[in-house]
Length: 388
Ligand SMILES: *Cc1c(COP(=O)(O)O)cnc(C)c1O
Image (cartoon, rainbow, N blue to C red; front, top):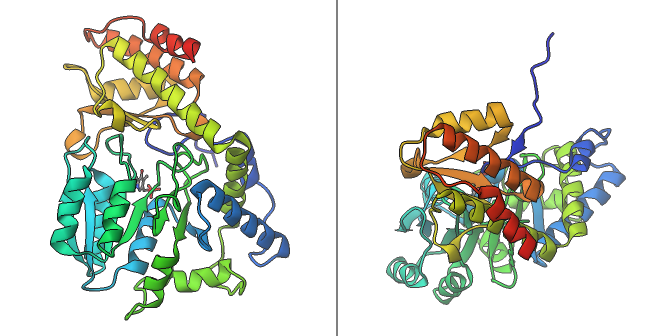
């Protein structure tokens, strides 16, 4: 049988990102059993490192078997019972997905919306909370469909003053910018391995604080998903080690390794690296004449949405980037389809070399498209690096 190609791409889209070679190597290590004492040590170590990266002391902190969406579904299906009022803040694809899940769980869904590309002002959330008195307020920290960074501290205060649980999607933010689960009093938080943690897709770190644990224990009904029921999953990850489902051993090896890479770099140094490469990329894009979708204070460093210039063929440019330059970037979703490019600078993919390669390639391809661009993208990025 002829093996299909697995090209070595430069992944600069909305995920997955490239992995450190040691993370890929970890996945090729021999398997052990899921109750092997050596594996239990790896589990404990992984949970401990996840707590450091999430900045939490929550006991229930573990990687759910499944991608980021499984983390989303875990938080919601454990905390929402039929008839519970849930306020979801929707300003992109992932808020929309949370709202979809709440509906499937039989929760009483309330939404507050912001335009795609904009963040939520605390006042808007406060008004919505006052209107529906929800059990849970759910919001996306880093909206990958638009590149918006949502400040969380005020929203957390508003949720708690109304007696609600505060639930946060940190799939794209974790490992790329500050996520302070305890400092921001987040009750339940989920992430995914394939974005700024730079590990293959397949696990969803989740953490529940004391208030979320209380809500879980006070449920009137059983958690509707057997697989994602934290009352059972936590017994395998806790002292009991009761078999629930077979842990994805190789994925946990990979996450363990990826978390070590992150902590060896240091969280603050890693965030600074993301900010610097982001500033260089934006300087280069703006030098070309491209505009960013999101206002500067609310831009994510790891996901850059740039408006596609008038008359340029979105698909042709992305196809040429992939086929001629080996670079993947993302297109727009929903109302932004055909209007923006989403350029990821996530984890191991976030390097000056990748920023320079992409800017050079884009300049060449946009010229070929006949777009009215100005030269000098790489020079503008170099200036940012030189000044840093
Ligand atoms: C990618 C992403 C998800 C979903 O993660 P999958 O790994 O694709 O299941 C959820 N929320 C946000 C903000 C994301 O960027």
